[in-house]
Image (tube, rainbow, N blue to C red):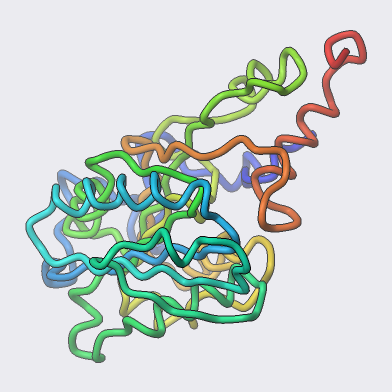
Length: 267
């Protein structure tokens, strides 16, 4: 079984190089000067559909990541068709967008649209996104910012599962065998993704897809020749719940992984 979030092996960058425009052999942070001015503002979008259980931890982690950088950070929570207590979990320091589309791609797009910079400011604005059932590390935005200021137009990061309690024996081990957590990896996760606002705008932003909206965006970034850093320094801890909020998301991949275990192991 091919893991849901991995590109074919013949389309992967090496661990030493990042995706880059055809005229450049790769993006090396220590050697490639940024063609853009330094990032002066960050916008983080979190799509939410009935995430009252996980949202406080998500926002606490984002607060710590925000405090770790010296530039302004706007956190935008997009409440999408929520009928639980998610709205009551929001803190005063986050912006809120309310939609009723039940579509993660449309929700991410609505969040960035609401905080869109002017054309002139888009070159110095960094868009980042994560998920409500995930917690980012304290240096998450530090790493995104470093990649951006070194020349990356996008940052595609990794995730770390929060445990496999309740899953069939062997599920966690198989996940680790099939997951590439090294720099230059081939995964795409909406829980750990960033892009310069001007580049995001140039490729059309998130499509209104209810699955693989993150993969779709990265595919268009690559097709446009945007330098992409596939980093592994700041993995985002994400839920291993069985029932996710999207039909073909991380939970679906884990269920497929568990079903692929030998019968004796699944019990």
